[in-house]
Length: 173
Image 1 (cartoon, rainbow, N blue to C red):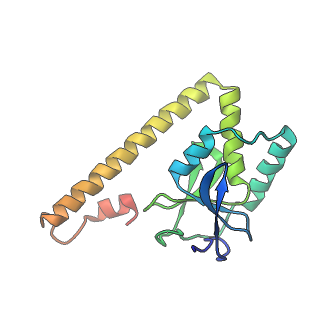
Image 2: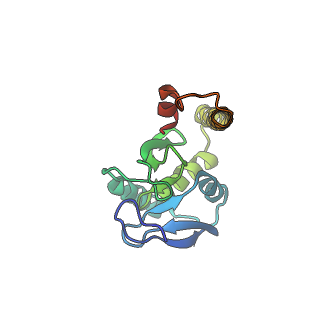
Image 3: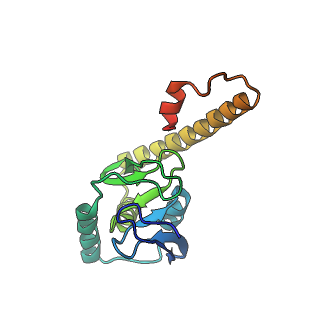
C-alpha cells in the first residue's frame, strides 16, 4: 500500500464517486491520475448545496501543501500546477508519471469550479478552457511522441552519451 506524500501514513484504496482512488485518512488528501480526475468531473453524482461548496473551497484553501512532496508512484518531486488554468486551485503534479496529489478539499474544489463553469458558462472562459484543454492534449501527445523517439534512438544507439540536457529538463528527468 502506498504512503501519503504529505504525512507519510498509509493511503487506502477507496471509491470516490465509483472511481478507485488512494485516500489518506490522516490528512484527507487524494492520490489520483488525470484520467480518473476527468472521470470524476464528467459525473455529477453528489450535489453539494452552496453552503457546503463554500466550506469545501475554504477547507481546500487552508490545506494546500506548502512543503515539497514526492510522487507516490515514482518518487519524483512533484510540482505545483493550476487545475484547468484556474490559478485559485494549485495541485501537486508529478512531472514524470503525471500523478496528482490533491490536498484535503481540493478534489471537491475542482468539482465545484468545474460544475459552476458547466452550469453558468461564461463564453470567454469556456472557450479559453476548451482551447487550453486542446493544447494540453496536444502537448501530452507530443511528449509521448518525443519519448518514443528518444527510446527508439537509444535502442538503436543513435544517442551517444544519453539524452541531451534540454530534453531531460523539459521532461523533468
